[in-house]
Length: 313
Ligand SMILES: NC(=O)c1ccc[n+]([C@@H]2O[C@H](COP(=O)([O-])OP(=O)(O)OC[C@H]3O[C@@H](n4cnc5c(N)ncnc54)[C@H](O)[C@@H]3O)[C@@H](O)[C@H]2O)c1
Image 1 (cartoon, rainbow, N blue to C red):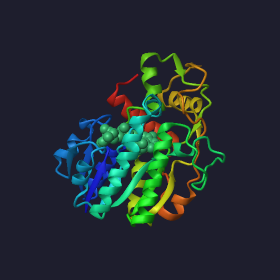
Image 2: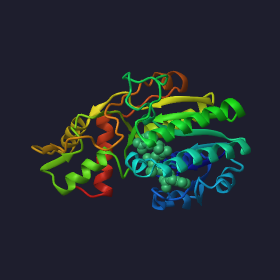
Image 3: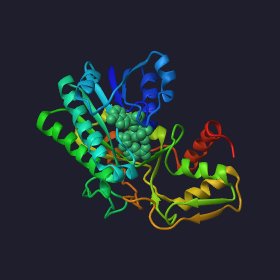
Image 4: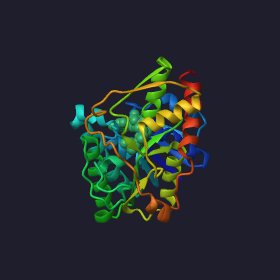
């Protein structure tokens, strides 16, 4: 089967690409390498299982060319930083809304299904925790607004044009390959100073963290099991932990004692949502997907990777 992965040189895209190649798919990557890195996928490209188009999802002609002949599109390319979306809301709108529209229009022409990488941030500050998919979407950031709008375009392409789409609302994804997020930030700070660790905000922000292999499994299961009628699924661990709890787990795993944790105070960044925890029942019942890697095991594997890639403490 010929498959297109937009954003395939990014953190999640590169892991997804690896699994797709292992499963025998013929994969094309479309990525402009704005945050992704060619190094992430050069080995996979050399293996012959994938080809790469360096191009931008904001350009319809490029997206159409990339989608031609594909049966399935995993659409991950995005401006995915909340702080960046506050600095430049227009960029977010262009990449995440217009870019997603280009992917949908190209999928419609190619007769391809689309699995869309959305985000937990579409809920904004949730009224209910754990949050089920039926909760209202009241995003708290431009990034969240762009993902919520893109979700609507997916749903409407399914409803009005019959283009098969499914939406995955990913919570915080972490693991080998990441170069951002809480665990990466804490590890880098500990490399500089293992006696004193400054954390953003109060440290009591409580979020759901999902290990990368489980996120990739969700993409694969959604492409097999979803009805592709524009429906959305929460994809998270279903548990949430404070920044201070994650820091403690990291100290324990690294054998560090007596680290002074210093919360910086205030909010971490404009638009941050300080409490996230999904209800993941729908994905379990309808896709047969459930996270397998617990938080401690996920942190252990991630720290092993940090030691090799960034250096030991
Ligand atoms: N990592 C997470 O915790 C998380 C959580 C929720 C949702 N998501 C979503 O999952 C997807 C993948 O996230 P990630 O963490 O791998 O991010 P990432 O930034 O590592 O990957 C995004 C990829 O898209 C590419 N890209 C960006 N703009 C592009 C454009 N205009 N045209 C073509 N390519 C472009 C980048 O170069 C990069 O390779 C994104 O849509 C993101 O919003 C991620």
